Length: 379
Image 1: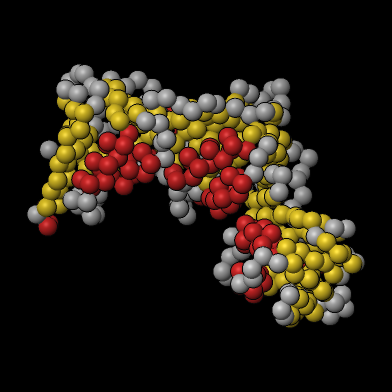
Image 2 (image 1 turned 30 degrees about the vertical axis):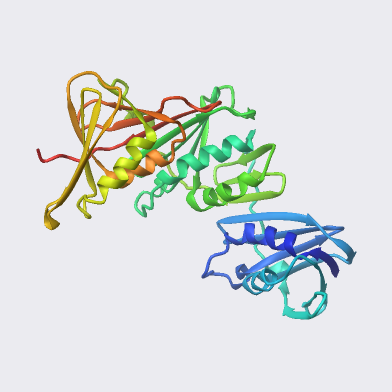
């Protein structure tokens, strides 16, 4: 088979799907891209068994059709060095010798039999569907992914939980120290009459793939899922991944319902103050102390081992009895970095219970709540 393709277009498609490929694969064939030529459409696949990413593009001057597996690293390294130009791919169907011809030279590869590439998993009869705008899914994954865990003992925490209710979609991620709940709407979903909701857990790696791909897409994303796998269908990409198996924790049960203290703060003021003060915190605990009193927050940190300390006072809107609470500064900074609102609301109950951080104003079609567990203060 033979075809002509733009070097830059091919490289951008292959780079997008190449992130799926592991540095060490159990099956040698997974070190390759699968090329499948049908008519003038070239479909490219990359997989690590658990997650598969597929993209396609139109090519020119086509002769024949078929499948071939091409070494991913060798092909990417070659394509990166080309200026934008047409490349001719010529594949010998008998011995799978592959020759790429450019304006100035030719490059010889040996392909592998495309039929050895793993087959895609088929969805079962209990398949459900969900459709929603690409922009909303992109925002939801971006704002929840940072909270996922790396916990071998509790794999259900290592992904983003899709909780599909009749009145909307909730995405949740938690690592037991911090939690984020992102509520949005969807275009359509299949939920049975007797069911209140359907759900699945998207693992961290495919969630990261989507985070990179979704900003380039537009329109709606179609999601299909059964009890084991999930399909994400976009205009230029299709992703199939295995779900995380198990029951996600009851996230609503850990969110405090009534909070005695409510503080409104300029997000950048507290974020920048935390970044400065946290430099002086104990490297092991990363503890910063927040002291709320009379429309002011006193932020302090110290490391007794090195005899260093720092403190800073910023303004806020707060009335009521003084309260002190300690947080791990890295987690609090991460949460504030993932909120885009100008002002944030911090809701507290007491120094031993989780604090809530919310945007003062939510974006259209979204409602975000972030929760952070406190650290015990000695004084």
